[in-house]
Image 1 (cartoon, helix red, strand yellow):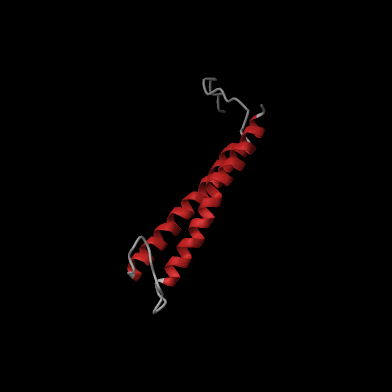
Image 2: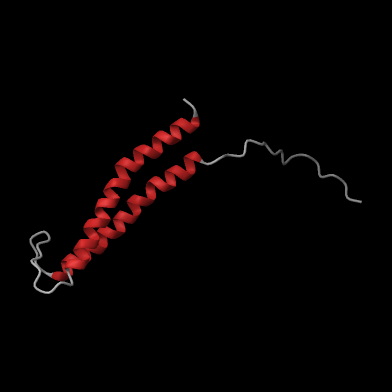
Length: 98
């Protein structure tokens, strides 16, 4: 298989396995963080009804979502970039200067 094909497959796979959960995590985190400021909201995060718990879990989900979204971008950049195929021999003698 060509290196470009492998790079495309890796980028698509990481976009599906990391990018989509990252988007969902960011959506849920933003909703949880916003709801923590709504007075009188019925909050139930892991059995806790404390607004601070909703805020901290929302911020945590936002941070994890950003990391999960960065993974496909990094994989795409590193696998699909053009590499310099020119081989430089650093053992050549230095030409004389005049």
